[in-house]
Each structure stands twice: as C-alpha cells, then as structure tokens.
Image 1 (spheres, rainbow, N blue to C red):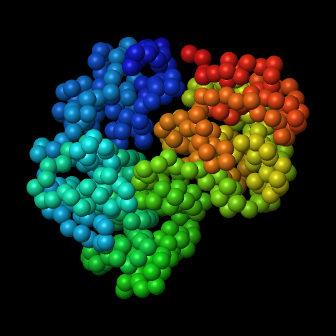
Image 2: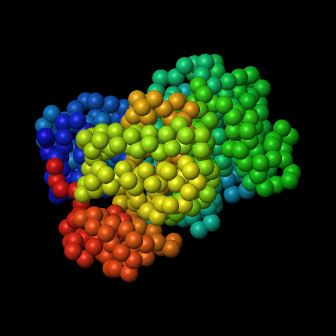
Image 3: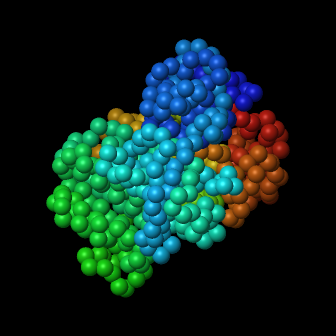
Length: 526
C-alpha cells in the first residue's frame, strides 16, 4: 500500500485503486463526477510525490505548472501529499462580448477568454459571483466553429448568481470562470460508431449543452440519425426553435422537435406535451442507440431510467442534471408507486428460488470485492441477502411484506458515484446471466435498480430522512420498536415495545445490549 496525505490525515491506498477512491473510502470530502478523467471536477494539487503523467493528461499547461492533477486517474508508485487547488489557479478571466435576452428571463451571454481556452461540447463553466458564490453554466458553443463561448442563463427566483448575470452584467464586464468540467460531452467518453443513432433530450436551458452536442456531432461528420427534443413550459421557452429548424433543414439526419407542456399555443412544428414523453413515445425501442439528457434533474433521472428500460446500454447514456440550490429531496414513494407487479419475472426467478440463488452468489462476490465490501462493514452477508430479497420480492410480486428502509435511507450515508453504481450493476448483471436468466428479464430487474439511481448516487453523505426532515447523520437516539425486527448488531430479536438505539448515519437499529456507536462506527482503517 502507498500513503496519501490530505488535510492532516493519512489515507492508505490499495494497489487496485486510484487516489480518489482511497480518499472517498477513508471519508474525505472531495467533489467528483465522472471518475474517468474527463470532467476535472475532482482535481487536486500535489505538494510532495509524483502523481504520474497520466494523472495530468488533458489539463491546461498553467494547471500542470502549479501541480494540479486528477486523483481519479492517479495510481502513484509511492507516497503522495495532496491538497485542494488554489481557486485562483483554476480561474480564467472572460470578457462579456455580447448579451441578449432570447426568452423571458433567459440571457445568451457571449464570452471571450483572455488566454487560450479549450473545451469539449457539452462541458460547463463555473462562474464566480463577486461575493464568492459559484454556479455552473453549460457551454452552448462548439470549439473551432464559434468565435465566443456562449452561455444560456435562466434567471432563478432568489438566485444570486443567475439574477446578477441576467439583470446586471453588461457588455465589457470581466467575469471570473473556472473549468471546463463535465463528462456529458461530444465526442463521448467511449468510442462511437458514426452511424449510431442519437437521442438528445433537453428541458429549459439544458438545451445549451444538448444543442452544442448535436452541432459538434454534425461538425465531426456523424452519419447516424440525430433526434433532438427540447421541452419548455411555454412557446417562448423554445428560444432556439428557428435556429434548430434551420439546422435540421441543412442536415437531413437531424430531426428537431420542440415540445410545450403548459401552453395551448405551440409554435409551428412543435408538439404539445413533455419532451421526454414525446421522445420516448416516438422511440419506444432504443436498442443500439446513444442517449443524452440535460436540464431538470427529475427529467434527467427519469430519462436515464426510461432509456435503459427501452434498451439503451447503461454505458451509452450521458446526463447533465442541473444543480439545485437545495439538496435533492428523495422521491422513493413516487418511484415505488410507479412500479407494478411483474409476475412473469417472478416466474422466471423460480417463484423466488432463483432470486435467492442469484443474490447469494452476488453478495458472495460483493463481500470479496475491494470496492464494494467496505459498504457492508458489520453487516452479515445473510442479513444483506435477506433485506435485498424481501425488497425485490415485494416489488416483483406486488406484496407489501417489506418493512425495511427505502432506497434513499438505506444508502444515505454512502458516498457512491455513477461510475461505482454502474460497477455494481455490471457485477449483478453478470451473475444473472451466469444463472441463465434471459436477457429481457435481466434488463427488467436492473431497471428497478436504475429507477432509484438518484436516491443512491451522491458526492457526500446525507442524513436519514424521517417524516420529510433530514437528521444529523452521526447522532443516535433511543427509539421504541413498532414492528418486530432483529438487532443490526447481534441479530437478536427485538419485540414490539422494546427500546433500541438508532444510528442515523446508517439507519441501523441496535438492542440495548449492543454499543451502537461502536458497532455502527465508520469502517476500520485498512
């Protein structure tokens, strides 16, 4: 093992993991996104040791000069000391060259950078407000085609930065920007067949990265059909309607559809309804497609789930969910209500017998996996299998026998990236196939997991949510047992009316004979 020193603590890095994984496993709060070296969100600065050339690939020369590197791409040969990068080193000055209102409350702002500045279509910048507040805005321009970096900024009620940009910033203002960041890009992070069809769906100013991706694909000579859907509440929100219609006329493989959800008056050629609904109604079978979703976080989450269910491979789905000012409120109840019993799947799972066999095999591998096993410290394999079996059996059969935690609360303390979520899902899929489950049933089972991705994936630990209130993740409270259960520490029975100690970070309930703080503490150091 090698050591990673960060903010006064030492983290042991295993040979099979990168520096970012070691930091996150040890509880460090480091922002991240793609974990593939594309988005640059996790960038750190080395103060001692050598992160290696691979960890610096793709960074600007000025960032490399001050020691910046990408921990998600870093597997150093020796010990390494790292720190957060100096914000000033990450910043570039950009001059406002043009500004116009393209829709009520939506400004198109054109920027020129003082230094050489490269980006990939679909990436975003962080714009710094004079107060120091920082917000991300997607780039609507295509490198080598456009003279300026265009941002589409929607004024948000009470939004400090968006109101400043839309209402106060003028031509000639010099903005401070950081980036670029983001992995929802063209070209995508995986090689793509130039004849592969593309589905692009955006809501609101999510059109900025989506339109850039469509234009970049056309500029690069992509030959496959491109279906672009833009959704807005009113006709005024389709602020690039004429531009995109003209682009589609010039490029026959591009089909653009504007969608208006709340206005009876729709522009010529537009559809009534939500963009995602219209897009998937027109493309019910998306096998062999690549899909992009950007804009409202709920639309993006639903789009990912529905695209997967329609046949898109998980590695061919790219998303850019706009950040909200407040933490995401989990939607477990809404999503659970969307699911219907699937008795055909239940039959394929041997009325539960094959389900248990698959889960036993899967969790045997999970407990031996260095990336997944730390999430199951102090939880027996039988206990994990039992809870997952009860949860899935309820959903597939339509029964109501499961009384455990819902997906968000079951994972609220876990720092899980999209990449790690997909890693877990690929392992599950391989086990399903090895047990002879037909491909259509593999996809239907995994679609259930995909539905709750947004409740599980997060960049920092959250508190347990009870009755709509999020609680301090580290606190413990005494709770009266309302439904007979077993202790998460010693597995002894806890009867109705007894008292247990609840550890809010993990949602574990311990009997009075167990020391909740000790049993439910953070994973021991490797």
